[in-house]
Image (tube, rainbow, N blue to C red; front, side, top):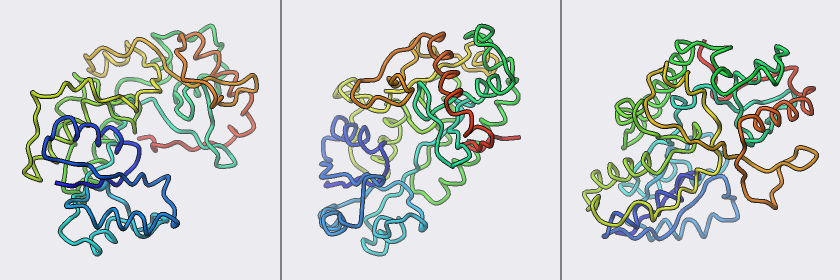
Length: 299
């Protein structure tokens, strides 16, 4: 079976999981939506024509490039489309946000565009760097109940998006989110999450999924390059029992606190992470006079 994938960066590990666990599948190509342009239309349509099945994340009718909108694909290739959800889940990282400043550009820091809402709250409140430690940096600003509201809000959002998809994952996440490490960031699932979704896609397509065959470790964890910290005490209070990553992985910054694309990602100590966050916020303080957050935060 020839398959073409359409979606965001999650298509990369999904492709490798198909290749490692589905012996009768040939992924002949992927269309990564945020790198696509109208100049690619003829090439992409030719690729899609050659697919037996097109596995696509839900691409809304408001997406700028019409030919990869899900409804447009369904009209072009009726019966060939399997719609999957974008695995976007705030539950294991409920303190984590994108931050849009006054000019609508995203703030950057040592974990790139991912920030701790609580750490920003501490910065805005004037809390000293030395007063922030790994066991209190969230709990000094938010309770477990505050964050559990965000978890439930994220489940409801995913369930709403899944109502338009052929594959659902919210039930799997509800069962596993407390016990299994499933997300590096809210939009970067681990291989475990994506493997579960590929298994479900295989079931819908009625193709073999060999769970006992090729070792899953051959699939590169391409989405694990950024791993923000998590208050262990808060994780426990929320009911999460899995072991959190020991290292904070982030991006190298220049002396001007700009992401250095010439260098690989770095491991930061918690102290280095907090100090760099504060320095980055000092540099972007004018943008922080008015901020909005993604995901939107539950009240």
